[in-house]
Length: 90
Image 1: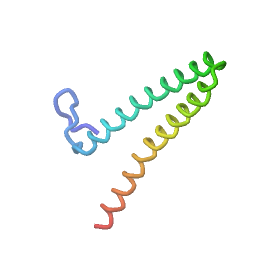
Image 2: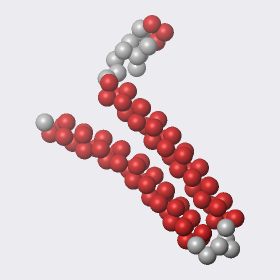
Image 3: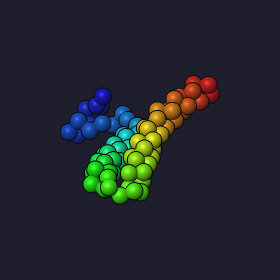
């Protein structure tokens, strides 16, 4: 939706919409870092299979990163849902 401004600059969006776009970009960036971290942990697991403590540490590392990425991506829609409920009830 453009308002026909200079170079089709959007003038009708609210600040909250821009903030949500920024949050999605940050979440995506953090997720990419998490995937790289999982790949690093997997390579560490494959290289250090002979050590006694390496497999347990790297498996915990992978599971923690996956859990935190899921929590991070589920928190955003949950907050949007709660804000929509609060806005409609007011």
